[in-house]
View 1 (cartoon, rainbow, N blue to C red):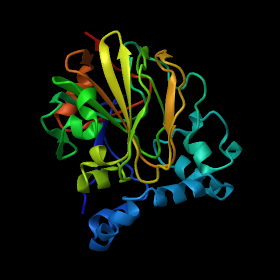
View 2: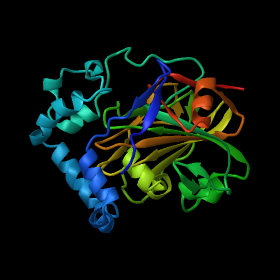
View 3: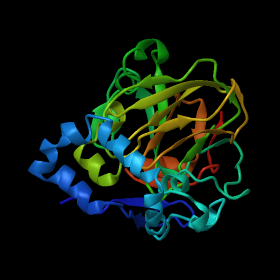
View 4: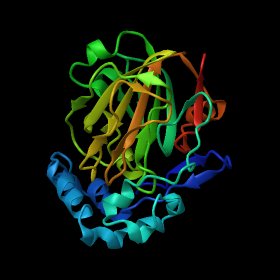
Length: 295
């Protein structure tokens, strides 16, 4: 059986055991022979996620809102509206927050709520550790990755969202987006700790939407990763010029991930994030918190 997964709470510096929504169902899917034989049906097609999405978009799903809001870490009191004002589960899941709930720090900030781990100095062609797997950036960027990821070393920040988190994501700094979003179809594995320990290559196998961004410190990429239950990755931004903190998009129901890829050394990442990552630990962060400063 999978042991509990711990992360570091950035504010207290203490280790916390993660609460996993749907623990029993996920253990069936990833830890039993029958569950694994169903992978092509569960994760190889968008249909299960689409069906779940249809249910969570319907008024019948309103009863699920209170269950999610009661899970530690949900911070439902920060929601823009009272819980009874949401017409369906997905409306609450993709909620906006009250003004000021996520103040912007200085430097480069986290694009979303989540659990962050750094992988520094990753070569585009050389496998690097990603949740126990060895994947390279060309695999993450998928077909056509070669022109998008030139030779050289990169620093990678993986921000993994859990269902309790705020599920809108934002630009981490002032930047421009000179190219359209590139969508790479894929599978729909969960990105929660149980799934990642059993299927650690999901960041290169799940659906990805990739946006190249240009900032004062150079080009970087935002890779939005879909997951089981995520029937939609919605890009809500418009135009090509963006201020730090501008909304970029949102994930519908399910745990999801945003990956930042930047030239190695372009940013000086905060020391606590570097230290925790070197120890193999994720750090719980909030959208808008500083994670690095340009060198």
